[in-house]
Length: 245
Image (cartoon, rainbow, N blue to C red):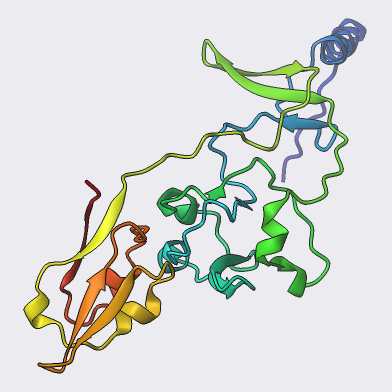
C-alpha cells in the first residue's frame, strides 16, 4: 500500500501561510465577521409582534372564555375571582406561544411582550395565575447592546447599537367589532336556562308567563358584552351574535 507523501513546504510557503493566518486574525479583532449574538450581554432586537410572555389586564376582560376555548394546547383555564368573574391562568409547561388567545381576545385583555427567557425552579411555578400576569415578572438584564441582523448584497452582517430594547410592548389593543347576542327563533327555545347560567354579565334572564306557564328568555342588550358564551352553549342553536346597533 502506497503512503501519501508529506508535502514539502519551502520557507517562503510557510511564511506566506503564517502571514495569511495572522492577517485573518487581525481582521477578526478589528471587524468581526461572526453572526453570533453574545447573549446575555447582547440581545437580538425582536419585532413588536414577538410572541413572548403574556400580560393580562383584568379591566379589559369580559370573562368570555374565548382564550380558553381557542388554546390548542389546553394551557389556559379560567379561575374564579372574588368578584365572581372568571379570569385566565396559563400553564407555561403546556403553552406553545401561538398567541391564538391574544389574537382572539375581544377586549384586548391579553397582550404580548418580548420576554422569552423565563426560568422556573419547579413545574408548579410554570403555572401563572391571573395575578402573576398583571405585572411583568422580575427581569435581571445584563444587555447593553441591541443586535440587528442586516442582509446587504446577499451578505449577512450584524449591526450592534448601544441601547436597550424595551421588552414591554405598548400596543393599543384593537377595539374589535361591538357585538350583542340575540335569539333568532324564540319558538324553538326549550327553556333549559343554560344561557342564564353561563352569562357572566347578567344580561340573560328568564321570565315566567303565569297564564301559559312558559318560561321566556330575555337578553338585555345594554348589559350584553358580546362574549358569545350563551351562543356557544345553546343546545338548540337559536342564539346568534350580531353587530350592535
